[in-house]
Image (cartoon, rainbow, N blue to C red; front, side):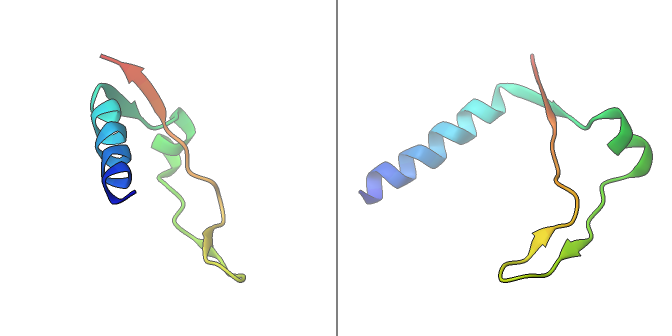
Length: 55
């Protein structure tokens, strides 16, 4: 199990390395909103997302 957990992180990192990540147009203009929403867990008030472009 510990080896499998390490391999998942390695696989995800190597997959993400193959893409160029870009912010959506509205996020580039207005900057990323880092405000937080309090509750049982701390989450972002506005969800963050990016666009993956193949190289």
